[in-house]
Image 1 (cartoon, one colour):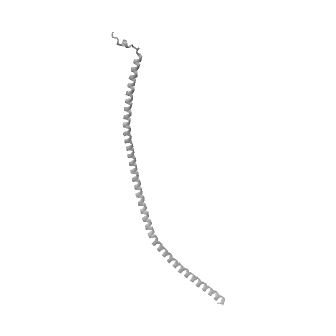
Image 2 (tube, one colour; image 1 turned 120 degrees about the vertical axis):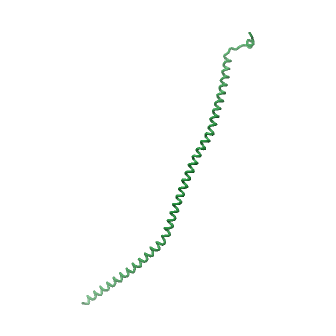
Image 3 (tube, one colour; image 1 turned 135 degrees about the vertical axis):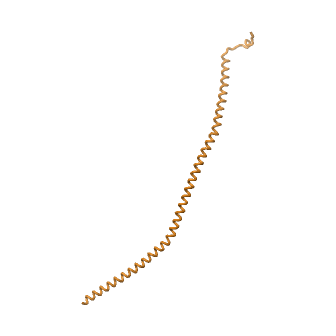
Length: 145
């Protein structure tokens, strides 16, 4: 072999050695990176588990609160409906209480008014009869016979 062949062979050996060192370095860096990723994943898992537990508890509490609020709204709706019915019944009773005697009072007033009108009619009728008779002297009315 010539010197040039040995030189190229030495360069090839050096290149292979350099590539092997780079590959070993990459493998070591990859292993370190994998360990670091595993640590981060473990830490993230440990940190997120309590957050998820708190979030689950918060969600359950919110659902329970929403259910209680819905029950309160239904209860309020029922109470308001009953109150509306009772107010309507009370107003109807008050109206019948007021309008019943008022109608009776109006009927009594109409009866009294009709009675007064009939007395006026009798009075006017008697006046008409008196004015329609011829005037008679007082002396003639005292005359017997």
